[in-house]
Image (cartoon, rainbow over all chains, first blue to last red; front, side):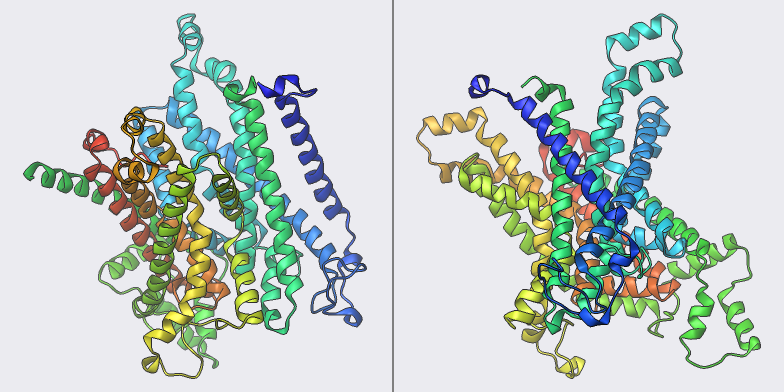
Length: 278
Length: 339
C-alpha cells in the first residue's frame, strides 16, 4: 500500500520504463543500421589500439573501429533475432491452436514433434539446418526459428484449452457460430498479448543462439560485422593481450539481452491480468 | 515390491517405444537435411586425400557412397548399416566414425559429468539458500546473479575466463585436454584434471541458474505450507525444517530437472569445447559441419539424440516411478509433465 501515496503508481512506472527501454533499443538498432560501411573499414595505421576516446572499444587486428563494428553487428543480430522469433512465434501460435482445437491425434502428434525438436541439442540442430542451406543467413534464420517455438507452443496450447472451456465460447457455439468464427473472434484476440510477450521473451534466446552459431562459423559470412564473428576473431589474438576485442563486444551483447529480457518481463506485468491491477 | 517393479517395466517400455520412434525420426530428418545441402560431401572427401583424383576413381568413390541411387534407397541402406554399427568413415579424421565418436565421447563425458555435478551441487545449494532467506539480501543478490548468468552466452563466458585465468593470471592452460608435446598414453590423471577445470567450470556456471531458481521456488512452496508452520510452532529451527521437510520434497524434482537438461548440457559443451579447443564431440561436430564431413555430422547428431533421450528416460523413470504424487499420471501412459 506504500505506492498509493506516491505521485506515480507502480503500473505507470512500469509503463514508463518499458517505453524508455523500447526507445533505447530502437535507438541502438537504428544507429547500427545507419553506420556507413566506411566507418568499419580497416586501416593498418591504427591496428590493435586499446580503448581510447577516439575508439571507445579500441580497434581490431585489421584496424577496424570495434565500437562501430559492434553496434553494426548488433543491429544485424537484432534483425536476425526479430525475424527468427517472429517466424518462431507464428509457428508456435499455429501449432498451439492445432494441438488444442484439433483431434486427439493432432494433439499427440504435436507433442511428439515438440519432443522430437527437444531431443536433439539445439546447437547441433541449428548446425545441421545451417549446413542444409549451405551456411548463411537463411539457414541461420530457419534454424533458430525451428528450434525456438516449442515452449511458446505449449503455452498457447494450454491457453487455448482454457479459453475453449469458457462459457462465452460455449454460448457462441450454441448460437451456431462456426469453429472458424469462434477462432477469429474469441480465441485469436485473446492470444495477442501472449504472442507479443512470447515474441519478446524469445528474442534474447534467438540473438544468443545467433551469436553462438556465428561464433562457430556457421552463421553469417566472416566479412559481415556480427558479435559472434568479432568474438571468434578475437580468440586468435587473446594471448597477445587484446582483451578489449573479446570483453567489450560480448558485454554489449549481454546488456542488450538483459534489456530485452527486462522489457519482456515489464510487458508481461502490464498485460497479465493478475498483475495489471497493481 | 512386485507392483513397483511392474510399474518400472511399464514406464520403461512405453518410453522406449517413444524414444525409438523419435530416434528414427531424427535419423530421417537429419538425413534429409544433409541431402538438401549444396555442399558436396564427395568433393570434401576427395579434398581430404590431398592428391588429385582421376575421374575414374571419383566414379568409384561415388559408386561406393551410392551418390547416384535414389535418396530413399540410400537412406535405408545407411540406416541398416548404422543399425549394424557401421557409421561410415569420417572424411576429416580418416577413421571410422564410430571410433572417432567412441574416443571423443570419453573426453566430452568427463567434461559434461564434471559440469553436470558441479552445476547440480552449486545450483541446488544456492537454491536452498535463496529459498530459506526469501526476499532478504542474500536471496536478492543470488537471484540477480542467476538472471544475469542465464543471459550470458557460454562461449563469451569461456572467453573471459580464458582471458582472466589463463592469459593474465596464468593459473590454467589455454586449451586442449592434455599438455602439448606429451604422448596420449603418458598423460597423467592430474594433468587431465588440470586441463578440465576451466571448461567444466564455464559450462557449469552457464547452466546452474535454472536448477537454482527451480529449487528456490520449490523450497518457498514448502516453507509456505501448513506442515512447516506446524513444525515452526513445535519450535524447529530453519535448518531442521530444511533437513526434515525441505530436502525430501525438493531433492527428486531437482534431480529430475537435472537429468532432463542433457540437451542444454550437450549444446553448452559444443560451445565450451570450441572455445577451449577441447577435443570432444562438440568440437568434432562443428569441425564436421565446417568441413562437410557428412558421416561424422550424422553420427554425432544421432549420438547426441541418443544421449538426450537417455537423460529424458532417466528423468521420466525418476519422475514417474519414485515420486508417488505422479504415479497415476505416469500410469496413464503420458510422459513427464515438465517443460
